[in-house]
Image: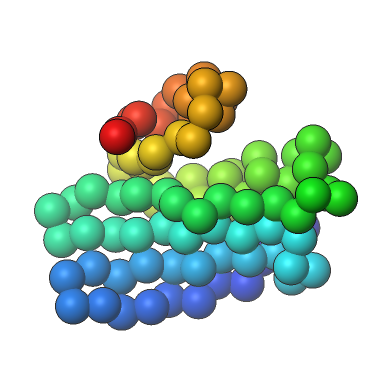
Length: 92
């Protein structure tokens, strides 16, 4: 799958909006001045869920971030476990 990456500059941070070329999934990756990196707004359209698209999207994010720590706020327990397995830091 190919992804479109758009960089947005803000006062105290920058982020990338990453979306599949077919618009089936997207996420936001924010890079803060203190070094914290937060993934948010992960979404996959209902018809395409459970087909590995979120994993492909997170793999793309991992390549963008490199070996730096990623923080994420999961919305439920299964997501929390999934993100922990990927090595992400869970934040509230």
